[in-house]
Image (cartoon, rainbow, N blue to C red):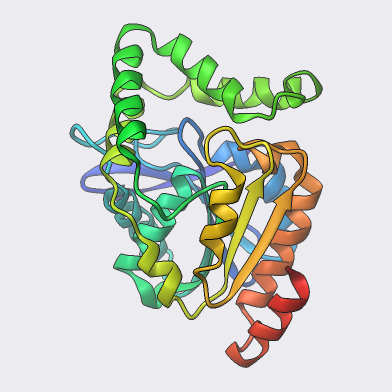
Length: 281
């Protein structure tokens, strides 16, 4: 299966996306160094039950870069432009890592459009001072040798045992990452570095929020995310016992199973959601 992409103009440049399936709408937002293609197997499974919109965020995949920084707000506005162009009003957003930061920015800017959010190996917290320093170092490395940076970064996203067991998946992610332009990488690093904390979204959201957490995630520690999930009124937590930061590639069947369940709950009447979330988590 190969994704057939369409595009819309956002600030006079092209943003690309795929649109497969029918029914209730879900939006998939990839992480840093990804693209809509990273969701290929996920889309194949979910598009049998839902209409799935997968977007190349600014500076990634085939989408254009803008200025010197891709803030999460800018990415969220690009997503909204596509959804408005498709005349879609309310939907569930699933974001992996940076895509989760974008989903939370979207929820802050356009709350009436959100039926639910999945934070797949993602957080509402801003970067710590240490992480901000790491981003600066990363930018310097990208400027000198982007290829070395992307390869080491992708390897670090998988759990140690999957470096041997999931060679095809790692190669797949590496290939996608290698297509990201130097400008796109730097703009995203700057945007993630400057993003604010959005804990308030978790605290006040009346819609369900799913946390997918990797036990061996070297980027976002498991316990930090499990603690963060307690903020939510309507939480659903999936702990992946064998995954790092790429659960949808490391434990795809488990992720698909729980994503389908979560999406269905998100589209149910509000009075049914809380009870079903208690049974599911």
